[in-house]
Image (cartoon, rainbow, N blue to C red):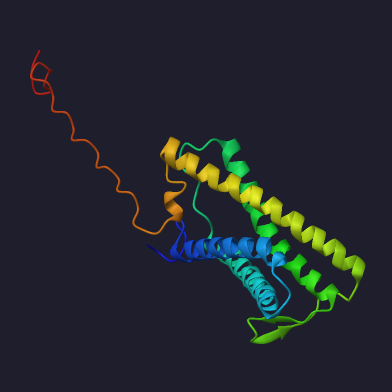
Length: 205
């Protein structure tokens, strides 16, 4: 497997970005849906801090992934894929990137407008990107939640499409984002020998 993307499959770096971000999104979804119900105390504060740190990590990884894609390109469409499916896939990818940037940024605004400090895994502080404001805090909170549910819907549709191609169309849409070697290409069949009754070019009429 090469590091860069090829016409046939995603390279190792793109695959690493993809699956690390997927794993972090799953962790973030769990934390985001459960941390509000935790009783007030040090554990709740630590869980919120972890949620913010992972969100900042996703933001940085998505920026790096977009930069890498611009540099390394993307595989060509799987042969036989209809044009309308290629267009939907392209729009879906753009929306996923946009959401993965917008959700952490809305969380950053949410945190800043509440006047809370923002740290990355307690290693260093990040600046506020909005002034303290109850109105901005309320809008950012609503946007953060709405964008999350839109992301959930898009991710489910994206995964369903990949499994549909894998299970029902048996193409490489999913396989080329998985680690491992390429699917072996079957050798061409041996040429069929001429029939004994077929005229030979050396035969005379």
